[in-house]
Length: 592
Image 1 (spheres, helix red, strand yellow):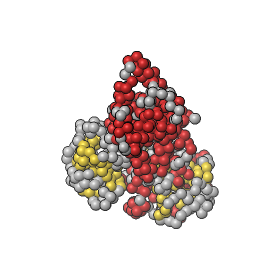
Image 2 (image 1 turned 120 degrees about the vertical axis):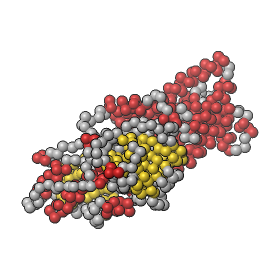
Image 3 (image 1 turned 60 degrees about the vertical axis):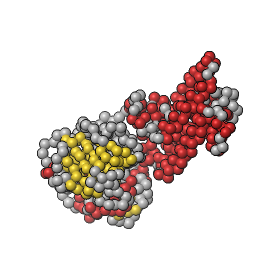
Image 4 (image 1 turned 45 degrees about the vertical axis):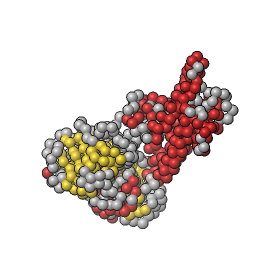
């Protein structure tokens, strides 16, 4: 019930958002007509259509998004025709095209100055409006859509999206009530009904143009003057207060665009409880290094499940310890299973995962969890996450994120001893990791994980902001700490930025020992040469494992690249990467 209330209030707040502006003319065009036959049907149609499309898009993938694009085009044409019949009343009689005639009939039945008895025309216009409406994705809508993507299709997701849309419809209904009285008074006192009608037609046409050119999700999102995101976050914090635990290196999949989240875990070595049974592993779409494994087949073994994804820096820093546990205790009844659950689309490619497993020298079984079925079976929310299962098939302990490796190993030793192994090797593993696997220097990490795709991008300062899904020429801007910008011709999608022409640049003002960037080549796999600098000069001894002292490197696969590892004192520095060839894909910065 609390989540439904949060979703509803988040929808109510959309009336303060600039992204609602293109939709307002469609609603106010019926402001002076009977609410039950005009205003209510369009709001119902808009609410149901938005909830249905958003639910499908969140859980069903790209085909729904593609199909919805055709629906949006049809809705744009329909509402454009509708606006023209408002501006030019005689156009409908002279026009021969079916859509214009349809727009005229809708106008006559839903707008003309008489009480209509049929709700179908207004309902159809509401459906068209629902196809076009793209609300600014604040914290509330972001949480709903992220939960839908992770938890799959269910009634709860649909109810939350319906509550969000109903909240928006409520605020629009109030605006409609106020607008209706205002317009009726103007028409009665001033006798300017025909000019009001034409003015509304112009407003509707302007709204259609704004939506057709993406101003509703681009410019209007960036110029929000009402600060609805802070209002929504305030509601979330009041109804579901944040945990007071300090931040730790735990990777999560949240809507705010950050992979680092707070959820540390203190080991309870002396009092290990039973957290639940061994969830099924049948959701794996493939297995590496092993035939498919089952909880039943693993009875009698102590099992560690490691949720990871191969471009996640936090996961990579945990791998040396997981690898060492698997090797040290494999002859004593321990089975380690890596559940590879992807974050980026390229991590769904099994060949990419296989290459990463080989490069990381992972010899234990890896379950490919591309559909998040194992993730959901464990009710997991984090990368990395470790679940410790005893020989009787019971989850006895879990740990989220990096760190506390000694405590985790002591849990393994205790569970093996409980299973009857009295000859365990002494001591704890000693790990010496290199490159991206080396532990972070947390004392000097003052820069956060930063996504480049527009879905979760933060602190981007190039003039004009990010342009969604269109080729655009970007220019740089002065940077403060943790701000970034681009230069050159780029196309920014929800997940990455793709370089359209050679010599594109990305700049970031950071404070950390290590800087990594998740990169990929173009779809044809052609290598992309690049060069990096720090404060305008080659990195020299401060170069990472994927570049030389002159800062030169090559993107040859889709993975995390370590570009900077500073040897001296850490300070605020300006990082720049220049791609000498087109086609590079950039996904996210990480630091250590």
